[in-house]
Image 1 (tube, one colour):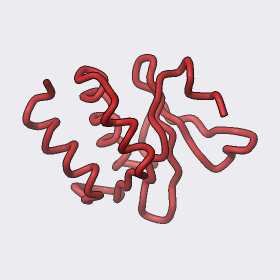
Image 2 (tube, rainbow, N blue to C red):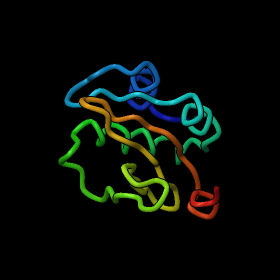
Image 3 (cartoon, rainbow, N blue to C red):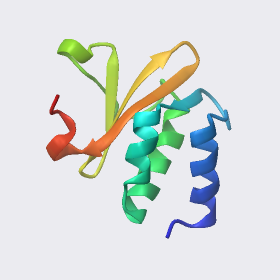
Image 4 (tube, helix red, strand yellow):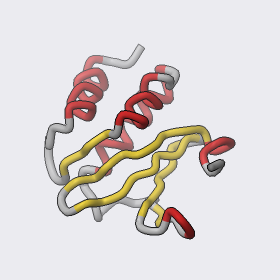
Length: 104
């Protein structure tokens, strides 16, 4: 089970609070993805989302190409987080395992 700091972060992320830096918004699809994660992966993803508040000073984020140009992905282990930037907001679009992440 995630520790209490991660639980508080999880609630703040889902509600879109700006704890520092950029605003963070999670789409309904990404929120559903978060709900399906194991506790260990959930914790890791929550820390990645918190790091994204420091955009553009985030290491490891890669721009996507083709139909997803203008979007980015960042990884944590075998999981990927897809997001885009709109003004002062990081919009989390999808979270998934790399084996299925690039299908669609």
